[in-house]
Image (cartoon, rainbow over all chains, first blue to last red; front, side, top):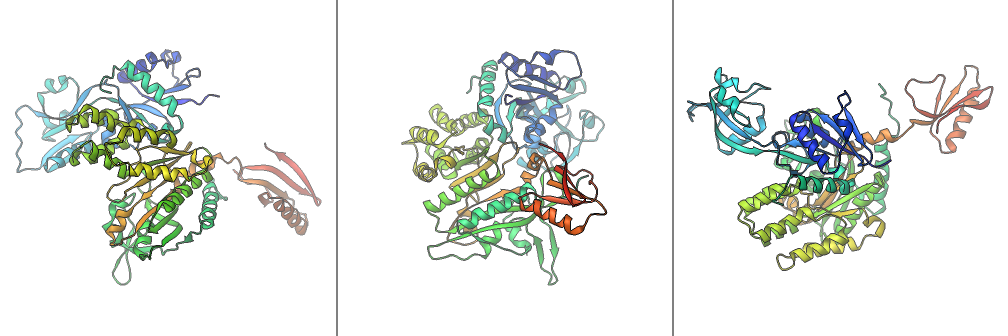
Length: 213
Length: 372
């Protein structure tokens, strides 16, 4: 039996784009497009095995070796710091981690800033780097509602187009870091499947029009 | 739940490593369970996890259950006259493990060489690291890096010291795209950025990578660390050398480590199982003039490998109520003498995985079941 390469794909729109890149890079798995409840899809010929997982769990699957490689957003990598290799930037799923607040918000430096976010670590480190005292309010979703209801002064969240913010009378005050999808690899997996992984990576790079490298 | 413990894989590895280290004349370092908490607080960043179990001793001193062995060895050692202190340890340490957020007792095996470390000493430690990995599994890799060389490259290409820490972590992640952005931000020329890039893109067998590093960085920076690596690797026998890889993504904390650093991986264990390097800087912090090199094997990472063992015991030996006990004893002894592990029982225990099921009936040994 061939040594299969396990690939964790993020469920959802981004994952479909990611799979399309794998497919055009020469690692297709036609069964993945069939409408059924299967969770794992194999193509023995290309020696790849794909599976869909929750986007925020991709890094866990890869770090713990259940997947050799996977595609995860930079936001997740910054927040959870998994011990993995970050092999390259797919340049898709682009957005930014930003501080947003009500349009008329003015920061009063004499008060502790209340920050609502799903990304406590990123927010904490950002404000520590500029020496601002904050109170982190960890929320799991609908972050935008926090400043409207007065739960927080600002939010730290992912901003893609800014439409949700605009519709709720909020605006971006500061960009913390640009975000995009990254190919990550388990460290042990990379040692023992180096050739397979670098081949996929090189083909994918061509598809992603990587010009910087 | 199967809570029974048989001579597990970790234990077998422990014995193998102890034999290996003693055969090279390393003496066993035995320490007490407790150390003063102060020792760990002052060197918190050296520890894998900074949580330590503490308690107050009867004299009011704050004590800690040891989370690490290396620090105690350094603290308690004395600078020798030109000789090298060679010790190994096999101790339980207490630290927060992985995602459990709870303390765990972890068996750690490792060795340390402290004193005037020369080329032979570095070779011996690296060789023992490689042999330790081979004792765990033939499918293993020992990654070698050299922090001194990375620093020379940074200096050689003129990377501003303010960017060096970040550049080192990016090399650790093999994060080429962000390293290139960082070079751009730091105002490095394209040619120099291309050179730094090689620290990520060049990896593999030493005999292939080391000459290419010399080619790339000759005239740019001091190559003595590469020559040092070449010298060390040349001393290896071909079989052991075949598991060595040059890979600069091994980046231990530069506040403690300098020179050669290495990390060992075993197939199917998702994390590194062995880690070590040259840590003269840690000794400096203790006011000692000596150099030091050593490594530790993380046996807890091997726990999952136990599943590879198909059976708990070789033979499950059953006997009936009426059997003569001396006969039972004789048969059990007989089987054990043929090198098999034997569990003697009246009935088959739940969850026990045995290769052979045997029964004593009227004094005779009968084979009931056998698995391949």
